Amino acid sequence: MWAEISLQAILHNLRVIRKQVGAERKILAVVKSNAYGLGAVPVAKALQKAGTEWFGVTCANEGVELREAGIRKRILILTGFWPGEEKRLIQNNLTPTVTRVDDLGHLERSAKAAGGKSRVRFHLKINTGMNRLGIAADEVDSFARTLAKCKHIELEGTFTHFASAEDFTAQQTNDQEKLFLDCLARLRALGVSPGIVHMANSGAICARPSTWADMVRPGAILYGYYQSFDPPQKKQEVMGQMALQPSLSLRARIISLRNVPVGEGVGYAARFVTKRPSRIAVINAGYADGVVRARTNRGWALVRGRRVPLVGTISMDLTTLDLTDVPEAVLGDVVTIYGKDGGASIEVSEVAHEIGTVTSDLLCALGRRVPKFYV
Image (cartoon, rainbow, N blue to C red):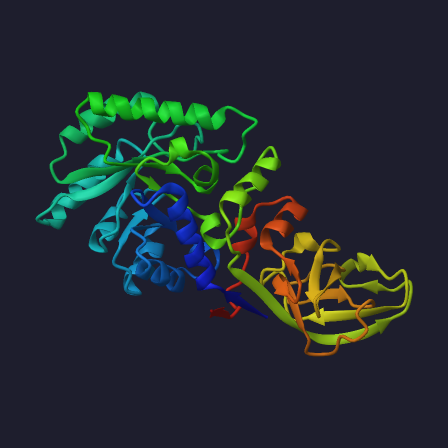
């Protein structure tokens, strides 16, 4: 099995995003979780060369990996830090996120100990309704008072995160945006400049211009995948405005072909039983590679430009398909799990909708042993 990642598609999507939000806004490319499974280092190198101003990762390890690979642009640690970890962030010129008022003390002490000539810059996250990370709106005053005592650190940016930016049937995103703007106004009233303001994730970049602020944070759309908007016609509108190109193709080869009589079980627990004399193929890929187990007896792959059903329980290393209707298929033929084959295609977002998950879940499921080729 192997994955083909189109850097050309990713750079095309970057250009589409820039056109959408305007050249005056910065772009923070979200490359956490190994660039959604597609390879953080090669993806970040291509984006850095194309002029991306910022990168977003989850933790120090992800940031250090990029630094060691030669990424010199700014890297924001989106999910904060635990006490003691801030030393490693400062050493590697990674930008911390403060998610609790108490974080300021830890950051100030480490910045002072580092003894640099300039103050350590950080971003502040404000919780506006996601209720995971970030200071609460009623902690803004406490944050400002504490920051005033810190002489070795500097607030460079302020952000929040939307819970449902793609849902236009609910009021939540509007409420979050209003609360965030109120918090920014309170910061300014207390004499604190919020710096670079950012809140727009992929869904908001596509369809909520009021949220674009100073910087946007594309994730899934950078890799070519739209959100599942509600109502569904909103997605068609977005697709008309932003022509994204999917970046992942996932392929394997047929390693076995077997004629199976009617009434025989296939795979663990015989969860598929043949209803006709069938030609069953095995490919060298399973859920350890990214063919998720939830697709057992659900969905399709492509062989010789035609859709064929996935049948039987998907196992760790192997997946079975029914090739009865493709009699010309032979051992060694390429099977496309995601991507194009002739005039047919199966995209990650389509499969995500099919099994009731999100695109990024399937992208991140790519196994470590899957070779990646960048085209």
